[in-house]
Image: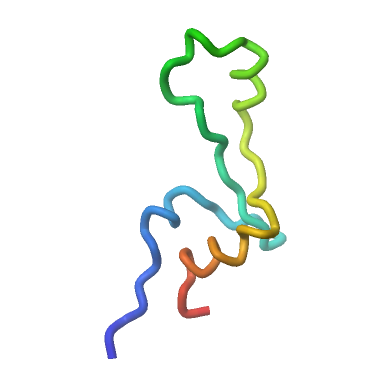
Length: 66
């Protein structure tokens, strides 16, 4: 029986917090920043949590055997 592998792309993008929630970075902050307002770029700065509807899917990608 082969090992069940985690999705490495997802494992690099998401971290599990101490309480078991999933932390993610916000998108649209990598390039074409000149047309985006300072307020918009500032709001994209910090990390946020994955929504409840997506968290089960992300957990299955990170830890498929559990």
